[in-house]
Amino acid sequence: MALFAEFGPLRQLPPEEQKVQEKIGELQMLITENYYQCTEEILKGLGQLYVSDERMKHNIDKAGGNGTADFVRQAIEIYCSRELSV
Image 1 (cartoon, rainbow, N blue to C red):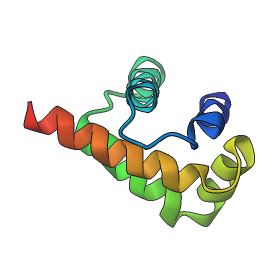
Image 2 (image 1 turned 90 degrees about the vertical axis):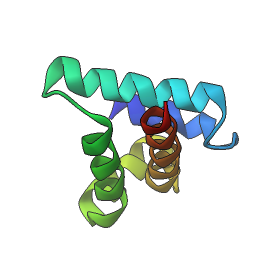
Image 3 (image 1 turned 180 degrees about the horizontal axis):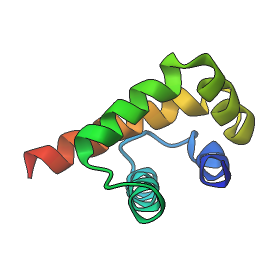
């Protein structure tokens, strides 16, 4: 949840901003290094889960402030679009 807390102050930026996108890359790396290979497809699915699962959304918003879960989902969508198009 600490990483989601770091997204809180970034919500003032557009989700496509480089700082935000770098933080999404950190999230993907954190998952890969500690849990499982987090592909762009998996990351995109996680972004959807962050807003569709009420418990997950609540915890993410609690860590980073109201709206953080949806902001992260939007940023993941952009990140994955760029990654898949390269």
